[in-house]
Length: 311
Image (cartoon, rainbow, N blue to C red; front, side, top):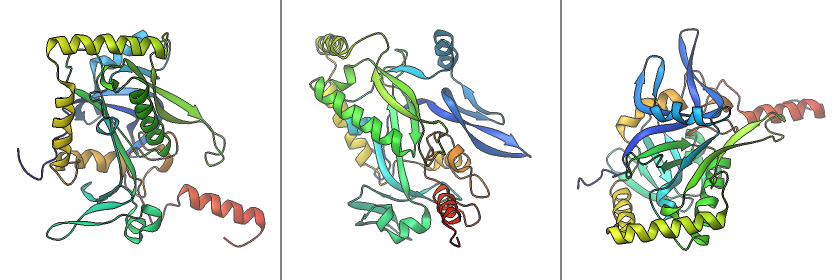
């Protein structure tokens, strides 16, 4: 195994709740209120749709807001990796990645291990735009049982909800998370920060038309069949854990161009309309711009105007 290279779950497609649109000759991210499943091939008009995208849309009664999935691993933290991440906004390369306690930061000649006080308490992170960034790998269908579709997000709502669901489902099923038939679901809500307009985040639930008890019963049956066939889930989890630990950063140079286009558009980015960003958080780390005000800045200015004080 090559040292320094993170070995991540094989990806055969992407899941997003946003898209790239062309406006005035430039490509910009735009939010959406439904899922889109794509391949890993990108052309001028955007990412090529995966055949499953059309199949699932035909099975739904409207917009694609639910996807039947299963996860690859019993360990919740292997399925969803969420970290505080700072990316180079020109190249898309990871610069600093931390968990709130320690971080790995790319120096001139090496990777440094440093304390991580979280973005709010880190001057380096505040200057560079450090934000939560999560990657969820799920399997759709049975064509490739070890292949996965990746959903990338920088949304507090999505990361927090997905992390809670994965840990809860693991607990109630007796550590049979990888055997549970689940459903990735898009949910909406409104907040004061969204000016009461609908925002969307990604959730994980049991599949429509069934119950948690029935889902756990099916998971036990699947687990028993796998054991009889010689499927070693514990070994799979161990292999995945070793693969993630083999590299300092999960994202590679090959991901850089997609990260730049989707999450670091020109002139300060699209803010709350970035892909995976329908809930007011970015699909990956937010762009920081000296000219485009953030949502927080807009709210502070609005509050100052209402109070009659200078902004």
